[in-house]
Image (tube, rainbow, N blue to C red; front, side, top):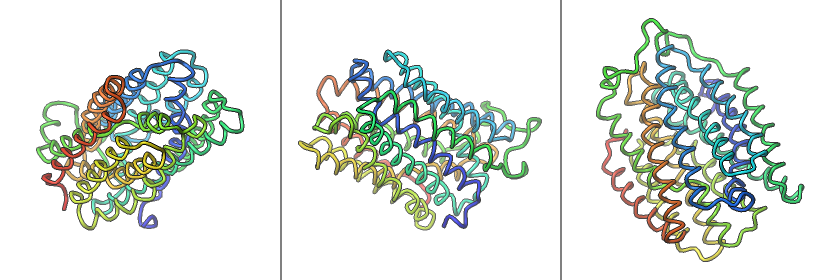
Length: 391
């Protein structure tokens, strides 16, 4: 399947792999660094995660619209990845939760700048009948990085005697590799295949937004429902650590989740090109219900790891599907804007979900928090079953 996809799509996959390698070296230890080393509350962890993801998604609105307006994707992609790389050493130097919050916001700002232009570039390069495979491949490679990053973090923790700051400092190396691949191997298609240049490019105004249509808004509503049904990975790490996993091995939580995610995302995306997306998305949300229940009812590490494996299966089945639907439902010249607005809506939902989960966790405990998540996932599953997605 990869041989049928453009080289730039594969190169973007490697960029995602190395940047996620870098990010997950930090992310796998960050909740424990915040609560253990810096003395932050779980509610603060939830706020940092929610705000960070919300910033990333909100910025995608503007970066996507700018890439449509000027007909160029790569400059914004380079800016976004470059900013994320520059934040890595800041985590190592942080002496207070506020510094971590600032670094996290800057890192997610970079993610927001690059996200919508990158997704639009994939759609520019790949015809509709292969987009599920294209988004699935990029997501699988991204998630391979999410496996390698925590494994590297765990090895460095053991080798350094638990020096979290050293692990954070070394995260700059894979980030630099991602930037090098991006600069040398990613090429935009001819301008005729993408948005018009400045003089005639679409504007971010009411007329342009009105062209997006009801099918697009239905996909956005489904994305919001799905986002509200998820907890961020920080809560998964805190849950498994609370059940007895030592801090040095906490990144194993992300390894278990991401390994399944990486194995499933590309084949699931390719399958959706053939059989449609509605049934796969509905199935994925049913799996998310089971993952929440496993983590809610877990009284030891085996049950918790089962929940993480199910969570990874849900992510692999679902993550590329809505991207392919956005690319299908918006006009070609408004792809960046469409991806940006989709991510704005899901970013705000992430902020609500992260802050709410932190408050519930502090007030009623982790088991009840995951129980609430199971109920929200069930509602999202019902919405997906009734949605008019491709297939």
